[in-house]
Length: 260
Image (cartoon, rainbow, N blue to C red; front, side, top):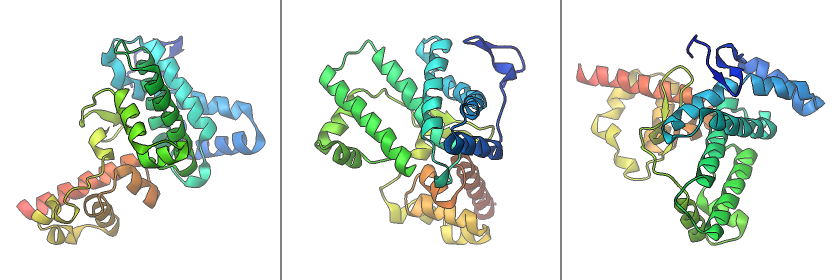
């Protein structure tokens, strides 16, 4: 973050606090088990930088930063109120998609391209159900699961969600916690050619020989099983950003070994 004073909604962003994971855990325990509202307020204030990092991706929309910040804070508060410590997932991993979703809803409501009311109603209900399912399992539900929960045809869900989506580049950054950014493409499973991916062509077996067990496991889940970084992070109990860094470091190491 810049050291210069920048005010958004009257907040001096240069003085925003940052909470460590153990501090957040204690605050969540106080809020959830003791009903301590001051702990909730500390969680909100301690994660405003997360909102700032998310709204940067929407800077080219011509929207007022103050408006996006306020909407992002609504998503943050929803994340805090619905976060489940028992899932062993970093709060930022859970909160970022919810903040993005809240901002996207705001932008869709203010979109000059009109979509029929009935279609928008289905889409918004589907998004609410999606957040509910994520809250329960900390996993991204499929359109089929959303359709089953709502009791309507799967094709209606897909059509409604497609109608309100904005085009997004696969290389658009979703989140950056100070290390390598997480891109849209990092969250997409590759269901095509799972048994003959590029890792086979690069003699993966030979290249993986020098990797440690965790790096081997991550590459196996990502490129053989076709799982997203979010899914891998949930399975092994680390953040998506850590999975991204470990994956890139392992691939870089393999490239050096095979092509030097």
